[in-house]
Structure formats: structure tokens, C-alpha cells
Image 1 (spheres, one colour):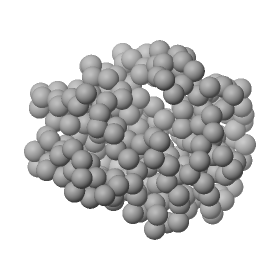
Image 2: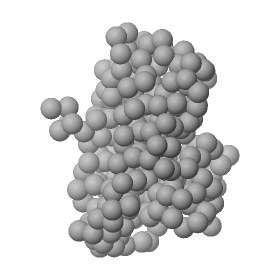
Image 3: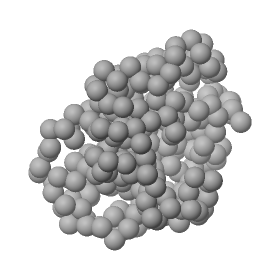
Image 4: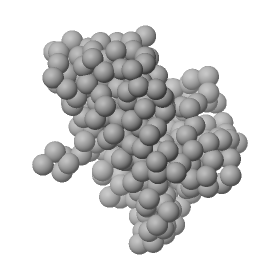
Length: 260
């Protein structure tokens, strides 16, 4: 299903996006050496509930997971890249942590992910990989807009990632959002321009470039959810929810400081 929101729904979409951005930035600021992933999950739960929002993850039970997910946020560390199930793990200096969060507020979903390095150690390869996913994300956003096609976004993302030297997995990618978290159209992280669904005002898309340093192959963890690189290499993931408007694109999940 491809859901097109009415213009009157955009303020609620913005509210959901602002909440997701605020929670992710708060969690990033609290994620230090010695922080447990289960603490991050509890903090996310508290902030979602206090905001009067609903988690998109707790009851989520898709075909690709051993559902329901049962937690409020995805916490993926180092070789884990997607759907990281929070568990009893204490963050160490230099860990690469990806946080992925989707909530529904006012009946509209927003979805975003950030990757960052914990502590003082900043391995150059990890810094470069995070930067590549962020550049790819903004390339995809720049290619979006009314009248553009999904393939334009996919091509922009993929070109950026390939240029940075990373292989691309096409099993998971971006997607539509709206009243539910995962909708059509699927937005692959590589593709051909001029192909696919033509973007219309009122469409919400979650764009999410993610890479693994030296492989395109995923393996599923014993927990039935966490997806890891097949070679054990590090990974990174960046995501924003955007709204297609009549005159362009609006990023709904930008942190407040990024608006200034």
C-alpha cells in the first residue's frame, strides 16, 4: 500500500518526526562507555510513553524476524547493522553504535536511525563509514521531490556508497511510512534513475542507507532479529523520514540544532 497524506496531516507528521529526533539525540548523549543496551531501551520506552506516543516495535512481528520484537528501539553494535535486539551488553570505548527508532504520534509514524562511536576512540575506518551513509542519505534526499521517481533516490544513494567503496545489500532498504511503519514503495539503496513510482506531495518516505565495510552478505543472529555482517566487519546506518511537498522535500526527523 502506498499512502498519500492529506496536507492537513503534515503537522502531525512533523510532530512525530521531531519526537523521534529528540529521543535519538537524547539517547546518543547518554550512550557512554559503561552504558548497557538494556538501559537505552528503558530510556526510549520512558520517553515514548511520556510523550503520549506509541512504539512501532514492541508488537512488531514481520516474516523476517522472530517476533514480536518486544523492545522499543533497535540497538546495533559494531558488526550488527539492522534490527539489533537490545540485550545485556555494556558499551566499550570505540564501539560503533546504531540506534533505529520508529514511533507513532497522532496517528502518523516517523522513523530515523543514527550511527556514532562511543567514547574517545574514533577508528578512522568507522568514522569514514558513518560519514558515507550520511552523505548517501542526503544525496537521496536531494534527488527526491514531486515528480521524481524512486529510482532517482536509489541511484543517488547507491552512487554515493559505491564511490566510497562499499558493497550494497538490497534485501533491506528504505520504505514508505504513514499510518503504519513499513509501507510501499520500497526504496532500494541502489538503482537506476528514471524508474519506479513517481513521487507525489503527501508521500512520506524513510530513506536509510546502510553498509557493511567489506561484504554485502547478512547473517541473522541467534536472537532471531539482529542482522550482522557475514564477515564480522563493522557496519553503519543512517535514516531520515522525509515528506514530499508541493514544492520540494521536508526532512521530518532533523534534530533541532540541525534546523538552525
